[in-house]
Length: 193
Image (tube, rainbow, N blue to C red; front, side):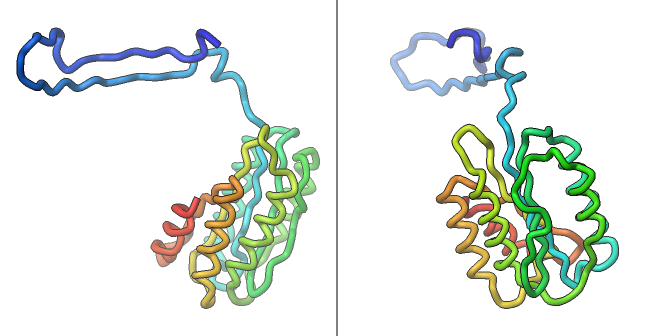
């Protein structure tokens, strides 16, 4: 459809002479959606996998709760949300559903406390299962992992789940919390999709 994007360009030289030798010309392209296209919003299908292990006690868990609350504040009622909390095991805190019961979801989130070990792969798998329940071509699906990245011997399984999610069209965005999160693992998870 014409008029969906505006295209502007700029050359590194105002004029390019015709020569018998090769020339190097740089072009800067600026492609932007027009007002009509940028106003179109695709519904979301967001699955949150939240680390609630003992290492997340205190400020880390408070930051997780605040981050999810901020994300939910940006979402609309027709968006789909699910929340999985994991420690040594994984628990579906909020099953995949439209964001029509915002206060109920926030109440469940606020009751989250830190305890136990860390089974990140279990949390990722349950969150992926929840995301798949409402994964459709007309919906932007994403799995958001919030953790300190310290997991119990299941790093390879975490990477495999991330690869599976990518193959199914559900990218994972992994956020590390605190100062000692496992950067290489979370970066690997994010690059698998």
